[in-house]
View 1: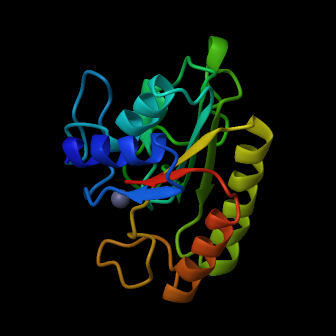
View 2: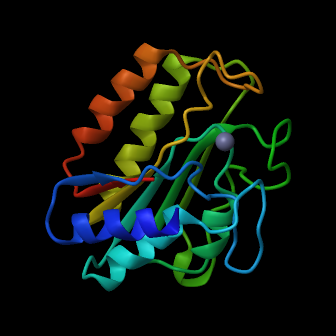
Length: 188
Ligand SMILES: [Zn+2]
């Protein structure tokens, strides 16, 4: 899966507009030194770091998986060159518990480069897409050169272990919003 991530990153870095690495999951629960949530390597973080080394000066990660991207947040917690945005179920009532709250903003050079947008159980298209607008606005303000989209689909209303109730139409509208950002993008 990490190999697919690197191959897609090479494609984006060589000035393609977008590439998708078919590596499920995004790996977003894995920290630099700790696995978690069925994730061993953090593909979203690998993509962002590889894009940085390929010449992007600022990279944004937008995480739409229903679970908070705790590993991704942890990896870039003290870095100001990678913005991490996560839209997810409220961690007071949902995995990964304990982290993913709105007041976690990064530290040191990373202060302000982490944005959590937790949503209450049952929130649907309107709330989710409003959070997406807020996240995309943060990506624009950050001045990213490239975007990594951590695209779990488990915010879907039919997800057996679900928490949010996003419809297929909601995902289609999200695709329009994200593509309108107009950045070279990698989907993991
Ligand atoms: Zn998930």
